[in-house]
Length: 115
Image (tube, rainbow, N blue to C red; front, side, top):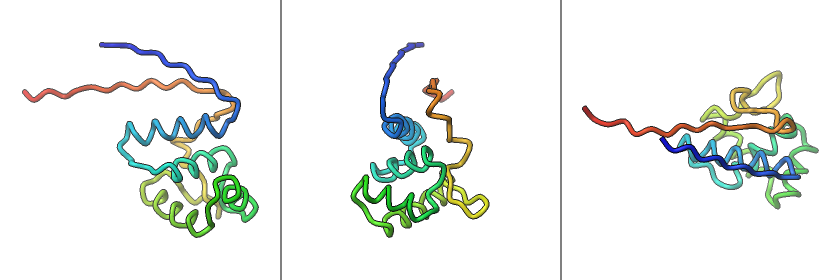
């Protein structure tokens, strides 16, 4: 088995979250688009994507529209990345680490051989 260590440091917590969700997408074959990864990361950092001011901030930062956000939210709910809790659209806690504390990922990729 090969062990490879990669370390990255970002000042912008959103960039760190985007890298994390990009890796999660690839490893789990979710095929998330760049905009979807941006929305997941933004929502994880902000806590939710329910309120108008948070959606406006996302739209301004990433030059997109609220209708795009709504379409993405619908898709992400279907695949289980987003949940609705107490009337708020949030990241599923299963894939929502505290990015302020940093994180270490261990990814194990194995080939299953036919017998």
